[in-house]
Image 1: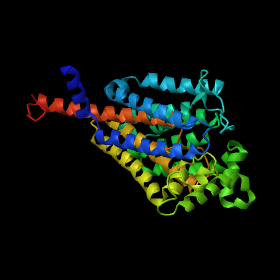
Image 2: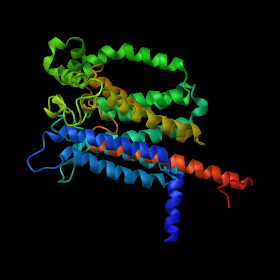
Image 3: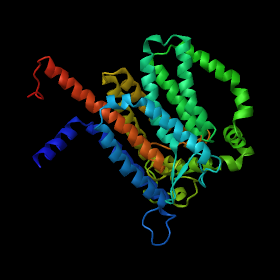
Image 4: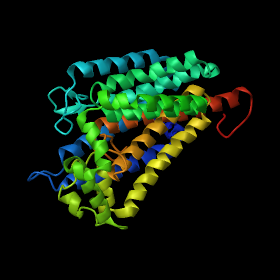
Length: 393
């Protein structure tokens, strides 16, 4: 029993208690908002909705995974990068062959059905974490030759593989997040700005071809609807209702479980991609800012871990996870505010997506491992050189 107590004490001492506490607090906030968003649609006798239950299970399993991963030395995770890479490519190929489109997203065959449970797994969410790991290692391995065209070409190939595999499943939103993660990690690794300028010029040059041949009609309409809403009333309806819901909340909100648009289910997918409209209506400006601040604090904490990391590859991974969360938050909130077209991106910690919540906590497990074993290694080094600290025996 004494050993177990000591093990628990050691675990708590070496864990980033601020990060895990912020994450759980934010998830509880998200669960509360999902419960409110689905409360009015509960069948008679039901206590919670299927979406709430799925999110609760995903968060619970995710926290367990995060704790387990945090106990694994990140150096072992780095050594396993080939297996992680093959797994990511393999699961995307499986999705291409046997992927299903759920009722809410008939245009995207990017989910796998888990047996007879009726639960859907979106592999691209897990692949985000795998990509961050493998790309962080790749960037570290070529950090001394980042100015060479061959190096940049191979990095671009690395980034293009998951983007291509995800686009052909119909999940343009996830592909966009991958592109942002790729660009952000390249920038943080020290790639010179002139290469980004050249890349932007190339994108501008091929964008007409992408518009004609790559984008589906619905994707084009969602973009055009932002500029010509009267021409596409059915397409812009979701965002119009979302804006009205947020406006209805005012500064303090209509009150929990009292939102007219939320409880009337007037905003499609308000428990998932449009969850920010629920926060804005029922908890108002104060609740919306609180949600943004919580996500920002988590991102800042992850960046802080990256800055303190002893290894360049793990610093890259921390920045990659931070960029992933920031990109999803900005795109999702911008979509709810009608600044960006609808692209099917979840709000981290808040949206009901099970795959999204699970992958976020797996990513947090990686960050917690980096935090834990950087501390352990630093203390070991102090002991080796004879410096006495309160932690030495």
